[in-house]
Length: 241
Image 1 (cartoon, rainbow, N blue to C red):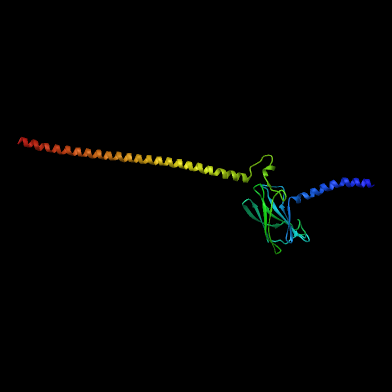
Image 2: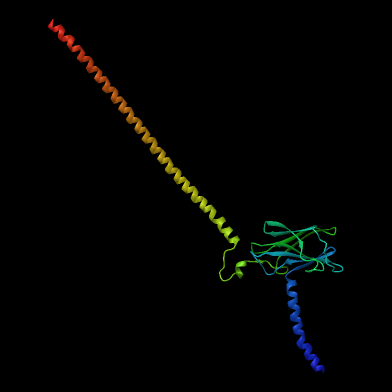
């Protein structure tokens, strides 16, 4: 009987250890920290977290002494989601209703990450009069970094909005440069056309001037001939006398 019991214990222990590890896995993806009179547990609401998918900053808070959940947080605490130099303040809202659904003390700040990598959550404000200013950063020992959503796309990996925005930012300067070059070429063509028009106008004016001068000379010659024809009869009459 003792041998059977020992064998049962030997067989059961690995199974219990495995179940313990499985149950502890989600908690390892969050960071637990005691802050004054309270205990915080912080991480992504859904893990792993992928770009382009709605997720949340999960903030669970209990009393450090009796582990009673804090259900009256209200709007006294804010969370700032930080990625590099970019920051955004997101409101914390309860993800529970006491006696109805959810886990008391579980608050969420809903956000859709658009870039992979490390993120930081900064909590500031107060809880029941206690000042709070704590930052939690993703890492291998806290909670997961954000992964690229393209890694789980199937059957075709479409470019994300972030990738499209990056490509647009890269292409716009090139298009602006080409547009300026086209405008410069157009300005050059317009300038040549204007010069041609001016040259043509000068030519027309010169031709008109030459025509006027030629006509004036013709009038002068005609006038001189008329005066000569009137003088001839007088001369002939004087000779006959």
